[in-house]
Image (cartoon, rainbow, N blue to C red; front, side):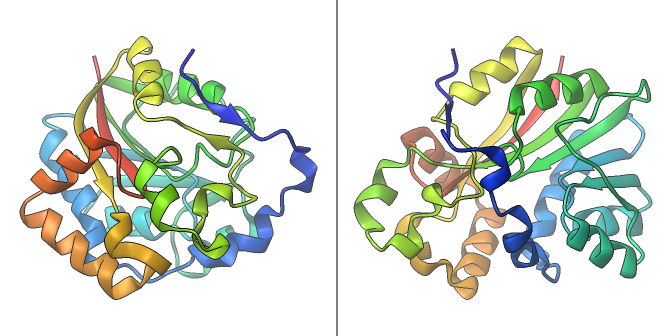
Length: 239
């Protein structure tokens, strides 16, 4: 119903660990903007965060430094080892098997995760149950149907939507409609990494873009409405 496309390849053939090291990185100050936004929107709810697909645990670690009760779950053995070596509370977990254990949280982070798991709908249903009323879901996915990317990024190395570890491709607004059926309503919706500025993924340009939209997010919200930008980054609230 939401128009999601799934790759017709065996899951066992997807080399997830091969790319895991790419997601270990130092914390860049512009990325902490989303933690600021969580805190601004949380209200009176306790600072309890669950980061699903936590990677090397940098976001969990940043939240803990601000006195959050934060934990992370990650499917990559390599990433969990990196997180634990840094003292970050991240545990190994197959996210396709994760189920809500009855302990509610105030915020869930699902940052570039849904395109990797085998059953994204099941995972989202479980996390919607885990959120307290008024709780927040921080979500990002690649903008696979970005018409501008398909015209500008002709080089196969830049065609991120065809990466072998992306099992699912979410069309604009279909995922948002699905989340609405679970009682999640958008609070913030933006595009990240505009193609015309981010060709090749050069980090200095990425950091510059993040600083600009932290001051004035209006342009990234316009890009979101137009369906352009390499990613869709959103904050939802549970009714």
